[in-house]
Image (cartoon, rainbow, N blue to C red):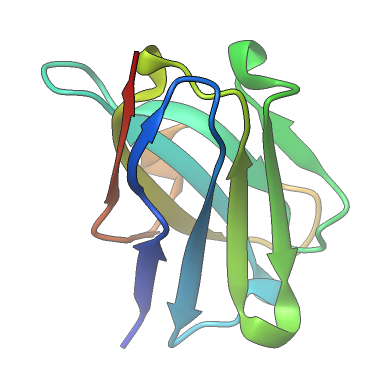
Length: 126
């Protein structure tokens, strides 16, 4: 059974940093592209970042290049999202997702992903 479990969310102040984790079981992230999405109340689920199965390619939403960094630890079967200089508009539920991939695939659309975690809440106060 495939499971993706996000952790690391919480309540922080503007300008603070958070590192989200996505721990995978039932699959090996060496064979999957893993993406991060976020969804605020009443809004669509938006792409944040993705890392290829090989780890050599990263893809970011244009507005998030710089302050957000995606990385992976194959030994821990875990993908991370480092978020710096957080703003109130970054508040949302953050989800990780996995897509079967053999190389440099970093999908940015939700329907391209087969497996999803339950999400972790990030709230940034002003």
